Length: 194
Image 1 (cartoon, rainbow, N blue to C red):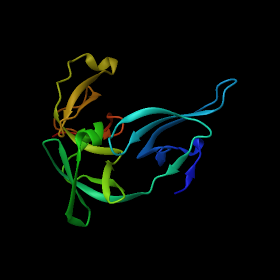
Image 2 (image 1 turned 30 degrees about the horizontal axis):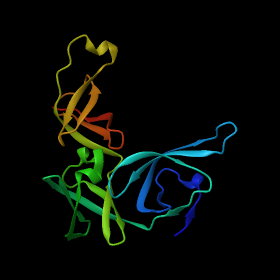
Image 3 (image 1 turned 90 degrees about the vertical axis):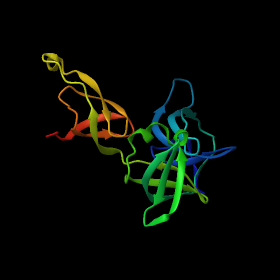
């Protein structure tokens, strides 16, 4: 394993901390230098086993190691009783599941046959990564009220996966929209309902 300095913990880096063997992925990074103090890396990290996201301050002198994670392409199959089932791409017999706690909020954007990347730590699949942007169909959207559009407002719509997203007022039931799975935000309309 390669040693990592606190300022090498960039977005997407997967590492382990001193006295903590769980692998973490850096989700957000900011370098901070306070007056009269040592520099600090303010990072947001996701525990790839529990799915918990937390703020963390990395200081000079702390020891981090690059985690030995293999990326394995996989496909989401279905959800049942809080278990999200996947199979390795090209090997449908090799199935695995993750809990909703491990997946976090991103699970709300999973639909059948979604191609994802899975993280393999040792012999175990510990987490998955969805595509950053996905196209999903609107199943429920309140109608826009005439005159509302002047302010460029938003309304809450329900996606085919059950997730709720704030969308512009011109979005209707049946439209297909692009959503950022990491932020849960509307990106653009892909296809208008007929």
